[in-house]
Length: 110
Length: 118
Image (cartoon, each protein chain N blue to C red):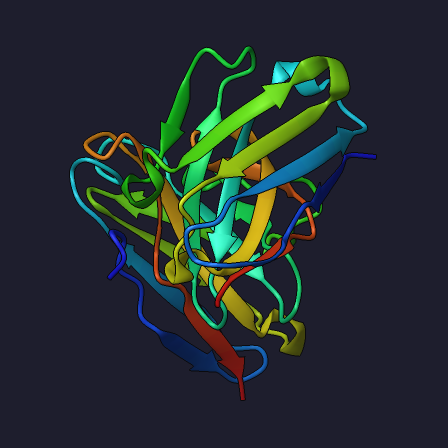
């Protein structure tokens, strides 16, 4: 059971907007920034969103992140078939003194 | 171009040891925290450990404390993970990653598979 809670799956049709939630606690999301990773099948994870809502160079602005209290969300607008992947949230946990990931959300583009 | 290349994975018996290496290039290795993250077959990501630029601070997930040791050699641009007393549940692909802030991992290696089985 992961410290950060994500829905195991999400889906949408091309062009739609989907959101993926990430729920934590005061020791992780509540007191630290949240990062999001995209893992395409058979590949290493890729940093998608950092510091709650910042996009690394090269990440399309279709991807956006937000945080409120002890929860965070990843939104993907204008869904494309190539967005089909696993998505993970992550944060530092001050109580555990370590990093924590969510269990991951498998996004299916219908 | 930033590159991280892991090596050292393989099949090991329960209770055995293995040392993973990560060769870094394309950036000033000594200026960055570095991390190890693992992924069991068909499962999600799990943060394992990280180490400060000069090696003076190290943090571990509880499940590996006392068994795994993270280290680095800045002169060789290399990151290591010494894994002792290995268990079946340590079976995973192990990734090394550059850590630009807490769990902000901007570059990842391709991973190396560790299989613990008799």
